[in-house]
Image 1 (cartoon, one colour):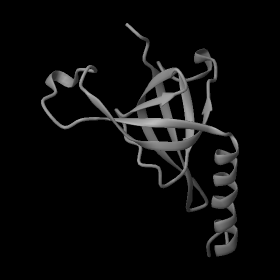
Image 2: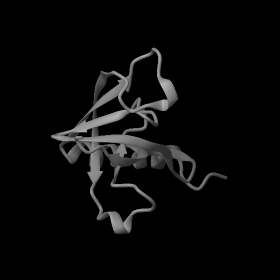
Image 3: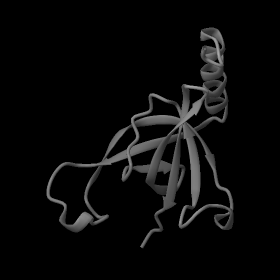
Length: 120
C-alpha cells in the first residue's frame, strides 16, 4: 500500500512547483553545441536551450560538499543536463549534477549542484 494517495501525490508535486515558481528566479539554459570537443574543454560554443524557473540557494561554500558553489531546485520536467550552463542574472554556473528528488515515490523536483564559472 502506497504511503501517499493519488491526490496527496498530486498535491505534493503542486506545492513544490508553486514554491519554485514563487521564488521569481529564472535561468537561461545554455547547452554545448554538437561538434568537435577536444578533451572536454570548457570553451566549446554554447547555445541557448530555453529558460526555466528555479530556486537558487547560494549556501556558503563551506556548507556545501566538494567544490559546489550553489544548489538549485527546478521543476521535474526541466530539460537540464550535467555540463549545461545556467545564466542566472550576471552569474554563470556549470551544472555538475542533476538529481531527481522524490517524496514517497513521486518525483517532486530536480536538484542541481552548480559550480560558478568565473570570468577569466
